[in-house]
Image (tube, rainbow, N blue to C red; front, side, top):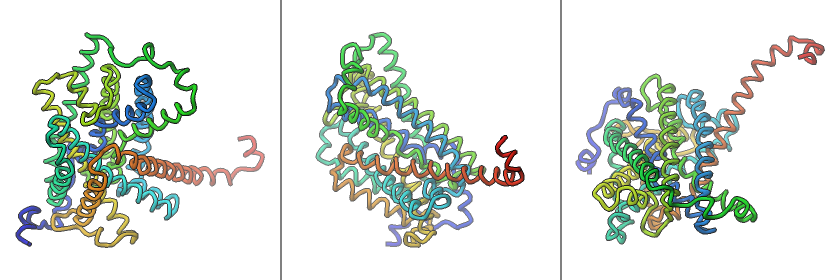
Length: 421
C-alpha cells in the first residue's frame, strides 16, 4: 500500500518547502480561473435552453441577458478585489461573514461555497465528457465511467502537490483561451462577410410581445440566473490568496482582473456568435461545438477545438481542488469541521480535503448520470448566496470603519455645528 502511495503521489516533502509551493500570477490564473473561464463552454447554452421554453423567437434576447451578466461580473469582481485586500489569509465570503456578520451566516456562506466547489467538479467533468461525445458519439454509453476516471485522475495530480499540478494545468488553460479568441475572431470575420443570418428583432419577437406576459418576464429572469453559471469560480481567487507569491494580495487582485476581463470577452463573443449563426441547443451536440462547426467546418480544426474544450473543462475542476481544501481547512481550524481536514499531507497539501471533494463529486456524477443540465440549476443557490453574503459583509465592514472615523469628530462638535454640517 505504501509503495502504491509513493508511486502515485510521490515522496514526502519537508514542511520548510511550503514557502516554495507558492504560485506566480500566470500559473495562479490557470489554477484558480480555469473554472470561470471554461464556463463559457456551457453558459450561453444554459441561457438558450431556458429561452427555448418560449421558442426560438426570443433567442435574440440572449444578447441583453449576456450584457447584464457581464455587468454583474464587473460588480462582483470589484467586490472580491476588496475582499482579497481585506482578508489576505483567504476564506472569501466565509471569513467576511465570520468577522463582520455572525457565526451562523458565516457557516451558511461556507456551506454554499463548499457545495459550489463540489458542483464545479461534477459540472465541469460532465461538460468535458459532453464535449468529447459531441465529437465522438460512440462514447456516449461510457460517459459516466469516463467522468469518474477523470475525477480520480485530478485527485491524484492534486495530491502530488500545488506546484506540480499548476504546471500540468497552466498550458492547456492558455491554449483554450487562445482557441476561443481565435474562434471569436474567425467567427466574427465570417459574420462580417456573410452577414448576420441568425436571430434578430426584425424577424422574430418584439420587446412588446415578449414583455406582454408576466410569464415571459419570469423566463427572462430564469435565463439570466442560468446564464450566471458563467460566473462560477469567480470567488476562487479570494479563497486561495495564501497560495500566491508575495505580495499575495496584490498578485491575487491583479489575477482577478485578468480573469474577469478574459471571461467577459469570451462569454460575450460566444453569445454573439450563437445569435449570429442562429444556433439552437441540440441533444448530444453542445452549442459551442455547433459554433465551432460553423466556423471551422468538418476540418481537423474542429476536432482539435473540441479536444481543447474537453481538456479545459477537465482542468476547470482543478479550481475546486485548489479552493475547496483551503476553505475546509479554515472552517476546520474554527472547529466547525473535523480537525483532520486542517492537516497537510506528505506533499504539503490538504490531502483529506482533496479526497473528500473527489468522493462527493463522483457521487453527484453517478446520481445525475453525468447530465450537465440536471446539475446546473443547483449552482444558482451556492453562487448567489456566497456572492450576496460576501458583499453584505464588506458593506458592514466599511460601514463600521466609516462610523469609527466620523464619530470622534462628531463628539467634538456642538449641536449647532452638527446641524450646520
